[in-house]
Image (cartoon, rainbow, N blue to C red; front, side, top):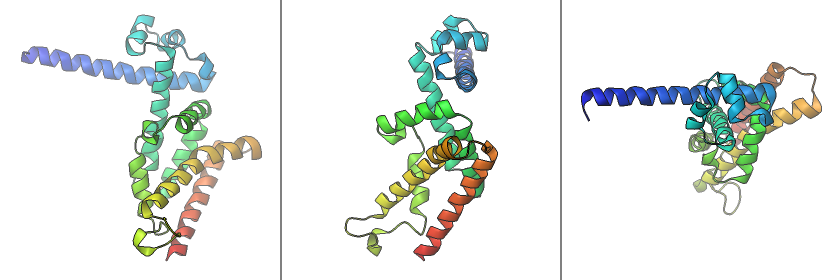
Length: 207
């Protein structure tokens, strides 16, 4: 392929990727405003002010479109949960993100519990487990903690699972069923503080 041909191909790829990204983000916004049932190829085309054929070029069905939106949710959440820096900050951002996308979060959780492996829905799972494995409260195999068969790898996976559930499902339950009067920002801040205290207490107990 000539240099000109390669340049045109690269430009087409960039345009395709940018349009694809915009459509996914539009789909997420549509779900947030009108609910999952409102999401169709036609409704997205109207919302994005694009021809339906253009949307079909990127997503051949409503199911493919919804799958892409759930993938967006999982990717964003996983990035937040392995972000460097102060744990209070990333925990609060992750909880708030989940609370602000309740219908998409619900669809994502259903996939999470019904379709293995977890990497399909939480692409940075291995990084979250690695972060958990560095915590002092995670038993190391050579320490013999946790009884027969206990191992650091399994402990880290359990802790990562608890952390994920605490960020995604517990705040939603609290805000809907326990304190519906609380604002999302307050719930997010409270849960982030609580989770951080829990991690710090676990670290102190492990010393």
